[in-house]
Amino acid sequence: MTAIEPNVVPFASPAAAGGDPYVTTPVAYDAILLASFGGPEGQEDVIPFLRNVTRGRGIPDERLEEVAHHYRHFGGVSPINGQNRVLKEALEKALAARGIDLPVYWGNRNWGPYLEDVLPEASANGHTTLLAFATSAYSSFSSCRQYREDFARVLTDTGLGETVTIDKIRPFYDHPGFVEAFEAGVRESVQGYLDQGFAPTEIQVLFSTHSIPTADAERSGARDIDWGEGGAYAAQHLAVSEWTMEQVRAAVPGAAGVPWELVYQSRSGPASQPWLEPDVCDVIAELPARGRKAVIVVPVGFMSDHMEVLWDLDTEAAEAAEEAGLAFVRTPTPGVREAFVEGIVDLIEERLQGRPNAERPHVTDLPGAFDVCRPGCCENVRAGFKPAAAGIAP
Image (cartoon, rainbow, N blue to C red; front, side, top):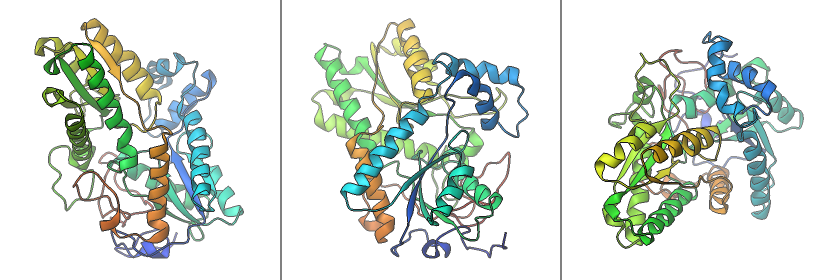
């Protein structure tokens, strides 16, 4: 690969290659890349999939099998691939309805269809200026930089790095189309509990997201912004949760007294490694002592109902609520709701048109939803920096 000059973005379109945080020059993208995590689609896929997820960490199959039971419970099938097929179709229809003639390619990091197969296919079809939409809304290593590193790795390994460019859509955690599902779900759930006779202070709203190592959280987002404890990852979730509750309290009489909290789930690291806390199930167990009788769990960190939602929330959190004697509701994820799919098209149009940042819709006042990630953004302290697309080289 050609050596990268300082402050130049590798594998980027000419408009993004200079490293400006926001790309305000229209770019003639010729395809959309829907990039996702991937998941097994049968019992025989489960362990090979988990080997892919944990590659390089030397975890034996016996330990992987301890995680595999989540997938085995659902026949060895993760719902994420099926959900992405539906999302791809919905996105294609929404693009066509707006007169945007761009094909949508779908590639995964950890299971088929692999990015390694999809990017050569796109190139062979003459599509070499790609705009990627990764199915994760927030800033962190696992939710943003790891995708960008995989883009760079695949472009390098396939020899396409000199001919194919990949830009990435900004973090979309506070785009109106993404947050609409959470606001609607909390509003309906709070109103439902109030209608059943629960007092506002007897209802607890828990906004839940995937826990990550504390060291990764502290390094999430641009380095020159003071995000506070937990870095950009925690700040973004807190801001979206707070905005959601503000909307609910304004819309639902009596909702002003309903408390809320940000919690975490799906921890997978060793006990010796600090991860973001508190855990959703631990908090649920404490709620009766706080005088709560009903809980609303909001999967604010998740785009669709994949395994972490179906198992960790619909199964484990629901069981924790039952053991605590609490009424339980889990609100919807964005999935393929019309507002969300149209929001993705809005995000695509931002880059096609080179729309200035001041004209881009958002519901929080947080900075940092950059088109081009800043130097040192979202470092993985265990593995260090690797080449990454859509960001300035550290």
